[in-house]
Length: 414
Image (cartoon, one colour):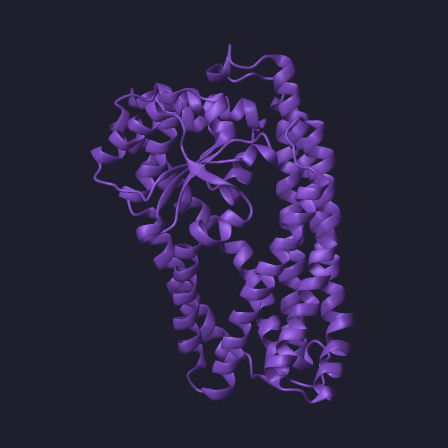
């Protein structure tokens, strides 16, 4: 059985590497074949120089992603077959309380993974993004963000892991259910607290200064009976020139957030169209549906973990002499991660359908598709989006319909 589990893992792991590489190469080859063609809907919006810059940006990002994936894969194998037996043996020999062992175990693994990501993040932020005129962040701000992120992640992981281990220790037959209840409540609490407690640690949020735009947004919300705690602008321009707008929070903390870069580069009509799209997600209950799906999936996943985490062959398959439950949690999660990769197109398909529904809602609210089309064109140009993704790559990864398809869909509405 141990050999079967090991072979199954290697098939899933290598299959993920091969399929991911095939998709990346298909996408790049497709871009090479069509990268000099300006799509009809972008005629007069971008020129050949801008299109070439879009292509180069996609190339560079893809190359960096390929290298980062390779390092992550090598690191995962090294942890599983070299570090894991040693680390588990050392911790188990200390005979400390199981919760402390688990905290140190996952703390060490998180530290290794985090340190491995830093060079790629630095290159992406200070080399690639600066090369294309996006990054505006300073080293001081980058380091401050890093420290804050590490502290917040450590606290959240510590709380979650301690609770999970306590349930496993003191409720061994039903821990999966109580862990699921705790996880669900914790996620909802984070969604509620994020806009007012966590996000302000990184950015300055202030009420939107453009009173005319604020009035238009308020009228737009009134059309569909939505109320938000406030309409805010955020100083994201101190990090990047990328643009965005989003809804965040739940209940009394629900708010609309606009990047200052979006306010500087888009007309009122375009901003309203983007917000109408986001309103569409709320009115169609997409966020609620996704939340319910994740809650149900987490229940199924935790029960699956419960069934396997105390199974001795799982540990011996990776050369572990001891069977601490925290090591089992890691091993099962790795299997689930590999399996989940191959099911990711299902989520992408549903997400793309939601995006089309939100686009349709935006058309209904504004009475025309033109502002949304103009906004998408400007966003594509300003963010150097890939206008020629491979269809198979889109099917597997894209949470939004490709830009050309999306714009043509909006044009048909008019």
